[in-house]
Length: 178
Image 1 (cartoon, helix red, strand yellow):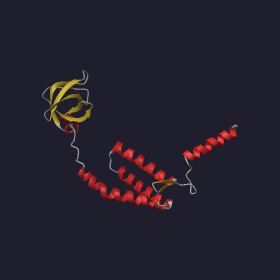
Image 2 (cartoon, one colour):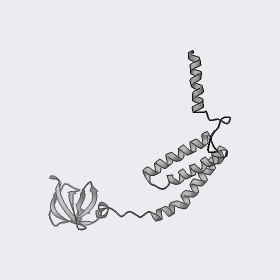
Image 3 (cartoon, helix red, strand yellow):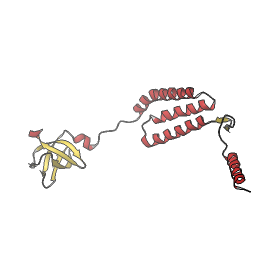
């Protein structure tokens, strides 16, 4: 057997195992016509589903469902422009109708501690020294490590305003500078 004959044999076996998809040779799965368009829409829907699982933003889920509807349309032999229309309409309707409902059902997050302290007034409980990098402030009943916005020293029992949070430290300034 020569090289050409063995190559043809391999190609014929590949065509039997993995038939080429074409109008003359479509793939049927459970009576459903699987064309390139159907497979493309399904792959697109799966990718969008993976993105939804990673992001949980409740938008790509509806777009993935739109892609599934477009795949169903493609399986029925609907032209590509109509498939795109089905995709856009279905996705748009699902997003518009269900997004507000999903926002109502998902509980709102409460602000974290650092969100609450910004803009609040606190009391220095350990001298704040920018050179030494030391100091503590009590604000809203919590003790925070603090650093001064300027390079001054702030004495104990002085009132300060929290202007930012950097890591686990609050950045403060004296009330006179606020």
